[in-house]
Each structure stands twice: as C-alpha cells, then as structure tokens.
Length: 546
Image 1 (spheres, rainbow, N blue to C red):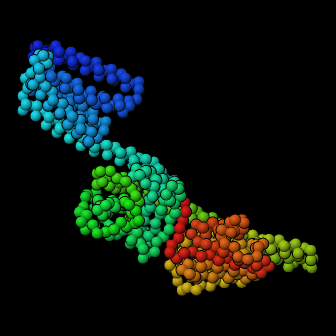
Image 2: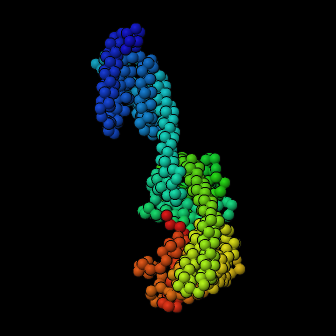
C-alpha cells in the first residue's frame, strides 16, 4: 500500500479503488489470523479460505494494468497454501481454477456492458492473459510436486519414528516385531502379516506369523523343501501384486528402490491365497535375510511410490530390530557365562565341602564302637548330605548352558543319562533308534532340558530302581520316551497334554517346554509299577508362541 502511494499500481482513475481493495484484503487476512489463534479450523473453513486466496488476487488485478504482474505473487501464495494444506491434485486444481477465473475476468472486462466497463480498467492483452494462465499452471505443478514429495517424506519420517519407538532396546524381539508389524499393517489396511527369515550361517528358514485380529503370534521352522517357495526367490526384491479382472498386475522395485521391468514376472501367480500381496525384502545385518509380507494390503493410485515408501521405511527399521536381536543374544550369552561361573563355584566350593563332610560322617559312623543309635543317626545325616550333593549337582547341571549343535544331540543325551547313572546309582540307559538327527537347535535344547527335568523327577519322586530314555521317529514325528519302574502317578491309564492340563496333573515344567516347541505329550501311569512319559514333535518344524 505504501508502494502504491509512491508509484501508482493502476491508472490514476482506478488507483484509489485498487488501494481500497488491497486494504480490504489486508483487513480480511488479519481477521483470519486472529480467528485462527482462538479456534481449530474446520475443513469447511480451510476450503473457504482457499477460495478467498484465489478471489482476492483476482479482484486486485482488475484495477491494475493487466499486463502488469504486480499481483501475481498473491496467486503464487494461493498455490503455496494449497500445496501446504493438501498435495499435488489439489494444488493443480487450484491453479486450473485460478487460470479459468483469469480468462473469465478478461472476457468480462473486454466484452462487458458500458456500465460494467466504466468500473474496471478495460485494457486486455490476451497474449499476456495466456502467459499468466501458463505461469499459474506451471507454478501449481512445481509447488504441487514439491508438496507431494514433502508430504510423503513427512509421512515416512512419522511412521519410522513410531516404529522406532516400538523397537526399544530391552524389549523382547517377538514383541517388538509384532508391534511393528501391527503398526505397519495399519498403514496399508491389513492385519494379515507374516515374515519369512533365512539365517545365512545355518541355512535354516523360519516363518513368523501374526494371527489376524489377535495379539498373538507364532514361529515355526520350515523344511528345506518348502523354503524356496516361502522366500519367493523367483519374485522381485520388493513388489505389489493384485488380482484384477484382466489377470494379475504387478509393480516391482530393485534393491536401490528403482522401478524395474515387470515383463519377466508377468506369468508368476500370486504366491499365496489372497487378493493382493505386498512383499518387501528385509535384511538384518549379515545373519538374516527374508521377506516381510502383507496379505490383502491396499494401495492408492501411485503404487510405485507407496511401494518405495514401504521399502524405505522397513530399511530404516531393520537396524533397530537387528539391535534388539543382538542385545537379546548378548544378554543370553552373558547370562549363560554367569550361570557357568556359578556352576563352577558350586562344584569347587559347596559340593566339595559337602562331599568332605559326608566322608567324615562315614568315618565317624564306622568308628562308633558298636553304638547302634549313634551309627544310625550318623548314617541318616550321611544320606542327607549325599542327597544335597545330588541336588547341587543337578542344579549345577541345569545352570550350565545346553549349547550344542544338532549333530551332537545324541551324544549329549547319552552323556546326560550316563552322568545321572553315576551320580544316583540307578540303572539308567539311553537308547537311540537313529544314528544321527537333524533337529532344529531350539528343539534340541528344549528336549535336553525335558530329559534333565524328567530324570530329576525320577530321582526325587518316583522311588524307581531303573529308568530308560529312548529317542526315535514315529509317524513323521520325533519321539522321546522316559520309562521308569517307580511308584507312578496317582491315576491309572494314559492322559494327553490337554487332559493333564484339565485335571492339573503331570510335571508343569515339562508340559511348558513341550508346548514351547509345538509338541504333544502323553503320560501313562500304573500306580506301583512306574510311569511312561512320551513326547512327540512334528518333523515339519516347531512353533514358538509369543
């Protein structure tokens, strides 16, 4: 307004009108600014504000020389506001609407009635009008494109921050992965999610599934025969496939996030039974590689951009997940080292001291000079000491990490049973129907713990004289049997894991470990004649529920 006083912005006859309109625009803007300080704008308010941002520059330009672009900056403000409020489509619509209004205005000015022309400056240069419209459309395109990129980047940063907040160090890996998957699936409109992970140093493949509509998940190992299909090795690095009336459409990206030609993949079917699938390769360090899969995911018009958004987001979250995995593994290793240290301390101090005291009790018992009462009491104390030594040895054995490879499983079990025989004096045997086994490492460890717990129960509660541990295969399942000739349980007959839970019977620790590897348990009892514990684990893999 000050500049208009110094240098008129319109012919002298219209300069006062132009300044009046400019003053009204300033008052309108200030009022709007004050209003926004006291209320949250509704969508309708924003839409009317956008319309006002277009109308005011249009009114200002009718009182200025049309070729003079002094008020074009206000049109640029309207386009910038549209880009900030929405995105590319709305910004282009604003530019197109502004251009159309400029053409209509020029037409009315040049072709209007005498009374109408008397109020307006009537010089119209159609070449300049066309240039102005082109300027508006080009500016709208550029601002809209930048706004769309900025909006996508903002959404990616916001989602990444939410996912990183869920992947805090100290959480359980399964919990962090489940929460991240749930949040990520919410963005793409699905909760039907699973992961297939390939461990590079062991060639083992695991499938982790998030149960739809339920906050539980489970993990199971896949057989080598089905691993390639689950890893979808024949498919692109990242892709989105959708079933349509014409067939199956596919969008794909390479490792760098660049679009790739999908012609070689056109004949591939949907790898799973679903209407659509979003699949992204997920890498965690140099140990894990696999697929992050969303069934029936929904995408907008620009699938390539949304697929790239998914790829970039998961790439930023993968290091955080890997950090949790390493942290949990390091903590487990540190715990194992500490337990091993405690076991050594028990062996070198407490156990040796108790053995020494037990030997002294034996000497005193032998030197009791025929005092039967004294000898009997010393013998009882000696038995108590011997029992405590066995308890400490069993505790020491449970503290030691069962850290062995699958090919060492049978040797470990044989050594475990043999040590039990030496320590207790019971007739204990280990029989294997197989020369070697290929069990998953977690299953090996859990079965070893089951045998440890079973042998402890036999010594403490059964009163058995002999025990036999057998391992083999039955009906495509691994089969572990622990037989003893002790007192048996309080019931007669065979009961499954479900029946034992229902009647609250059976060893709780063993039942929990069997459940953890997706196995089944049958307990057969004959009171006064012993018991038989039979555990079966499907050979197709194992499951861990979390």
